[in-house]
Amino acid sequence: MRLLVAEDDPQLGDSLARGLRGRSYAVDLVVDGQEAVRRAALNTYDAMIIDVMLPKRDGLSVARTLRSQGITAPILMLTARDAIADRVAGLDAGADDYLVKPFAFGELAARVRSLLRRDAGRTTAVLRVGELELHTARHIARRAERDLDLTAKEFALLRYFMTHAGEVVSQEELLEHVWDENADPFTNTVRVTVGTLRRKVTLEEEEQLIETVIGRGYRLREHAMVDEALE
Image 1: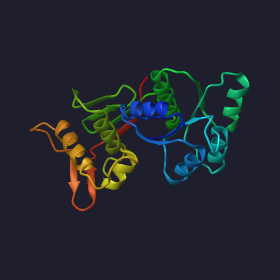
Image 2 (image 1 turned 180 degrees about the horizontal axis):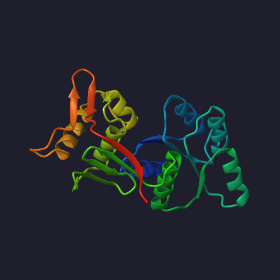
Image 3 (image 1 turned 90 degrees about the vertical axis):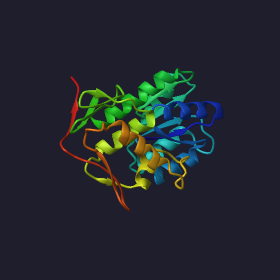
Image 4 (image 1 turned 60 degrees about the vertical axis):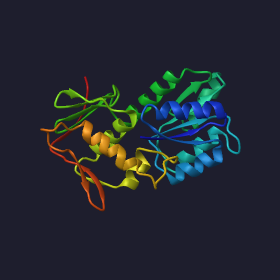
């Protein structure tokens, strides 16, 4: 999943980007409101984290503009102001949630997960494709009841494959949705990560699930796909 973070404090912005990338999100970081609006128009984000006090255009103006453009991705607003009127202003501008500084990163990560679940219209998602099972909120992956030891990036890659099971996905598509703007399109990072993921989801006697489609990309073999909610 790809997130936009708009935060003009360099230390906080870098910290948020590192922490979120460590939890398998692709993150684009900007430092002013004008750039946030531009990026949101160019890219599709699953959620956005926007500071209220941004240079060039403040966060409230950014949220209002995005909503007026029909961009519906959830917005988590960050602010140092704790007054009720400020929270109401943020929500009225189009924000979905509000987090007051200073905050613990764990709380921010939980708010992001909550917004993503709410946006998907369910509580805790479980993806199943054949023998593969992915608990997105619990960050657990299994094949045939065997736990898979995946890195954050491998988990995000498998999630994308499972939500597009049976489809051919190109390297460019994977770079856009699983990595972020810092990824170098001329490196072999996608090929290497797909290779390690393929090995981890497959034992010698098991069927190869992720196939290379020469000249086009990769495809997760689709046997049966179920997308359901945990009780």
